[in-house]
Image (tube, rainbow, N blue to C red; front, side, top):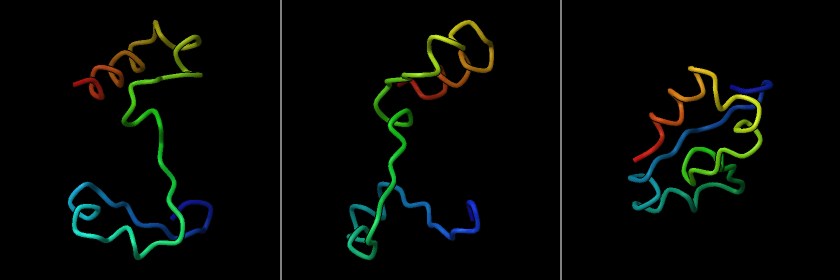
Length: 59
């Protein structure tokens, strides 16, 4: 629950099996899958935690 709003996490398998049609609204985190680290890059690019997160999300 985020801000007292219940939500579900869905992954590739659920999408491929048609589960997306059960939802009226979908929020995607662009940093999670595009590699565009945007607003955080300029400020945090030299921080170890940020570099670790980038490394974890890079193929």
